[in-house]
Amino acid sequence: MSKPIVSISGIRGIVGETLLPEEALRWSLAYGTMVNGGTVVLGRDTRPSGEMLRGAVLAGLLSTGCKVIDLGIVPTPTLQLAVQHWQANGAVAITASHNPVEWNALKFFEPSGMYLDAGGVKHLSAIYESGEFKRACWNEVGQIQFDTTAIDRHIERILTCVDVERIRKRKFRVVIDCVNGAACFISPRLLERLGCEVIPLFAEPTGIFQRDPEPIAENLSELCNKVRETNADVGFAHDADVDRLAIVADGGEALGEEMTLVIAVYHVLAHKEQGAVVTNLSTTMAVDEVAKQFGVKVYRTPVGDINVSKRLKEVNGAIGGEGNGGVIYPRIQYARDAIAALALVLEFMAMHDEPLSELVKKLPRYHMVKKRLTLGAIPAHKLLECIKQRYTAEEIIEEDGVKLQWDDHWVHVRPSGTEPILRVIAEAKTAEHADKLCDEVIADLQQLLK
Ligand code: MG
Image 1 (tube, protein in one colour):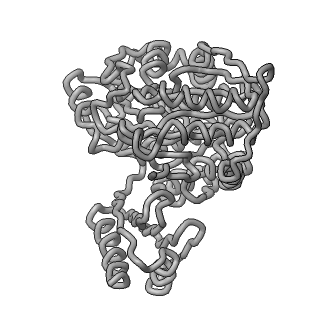
Image 2: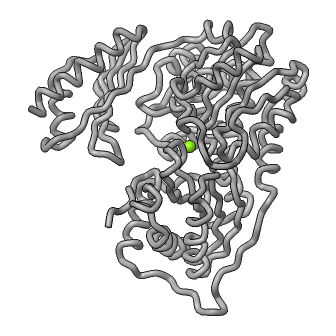
Image 3: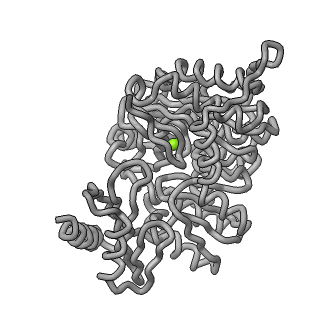
């Protein structure tokens, strides 16, 4: 039988094929054993398979003696905040994030609300493999407590971190694309509290995604049209579990998911607080340019929410995140929080009189090209070594694959954590240059693979 994919981003599979309830049960038994029958927060996105997996996860957690705080359908960042609120021993989210509807996943968290790191996943996997699970006897089986106010608390927390009156005065007209995901329960409500005229798009929490749930520019044509038709000030799009935010400017241009973090970093450094910025190695150089304007340091980590969150906490940075539209604002929490990001973008707009389409022209912008190459018999590390030898870059970074860095362009080659492929990402001042860089490296790799 095919198994789900186990990685730092959780246990993922296609429901009914590689992700079965018995697998979800076994992983939950392992997690319940790992937290020694403590308190565990549980939440899920709107996918139709969520309820079935919830049953399996509940059985696993309760039978190891865990007390389960069940939040129902909530964004992942809402669940992460709830872990702190309940001082829980951990959490499980049932969501495949930006993956298509046939996928689902279990994601596991630490008591801090952050994802399990590589060590945590290894520990959990060892318990799963051993099959030695904690078993509660009849009078020690866990209980469920329902929490229906996690979203309210999340909204209130965000409202304490932005200038609500300033945003309300502007009465922004906003199109919000919730992809029929967990955002339906939070983003339109937050926008109303911020005095916006809310125009919903895909805002029925059916879990049937009317577009690809990954909020990259090419998937947002309906949102772009709606922003144009309604003459809105801005359009926002999420993925299914609301840790990613993409922006469409007035006039209907999708800014691309890399720009979300650039705007948030600029806004926080210019108007809110000074401090270091943390992002991953594959995120746009525009972040470095903005940080330079304010004389603050940028730390780069391997790709992955947990890597960025941990470093951000260590260096006590002002803001961080990933180029996929995931913004981490420590005043709210050390997690990618697209609802917080949305409030920050509106606050940025409220600080200026010009429309967003004009404001972004003043921010640095690069072009990024992302391609992939299927691996053959040659192991990834050998290919990476060859790339390293072949190019003379100003800097070669080997923390996460190989990144060749020059003054105003770079190429990053990294093995995927979940598929037998190499990801090749290049960024430069023009789309042509980025494309050429990407193709050159891919052609070299293909030579090696022959
Ligand atoms: Mg997500």
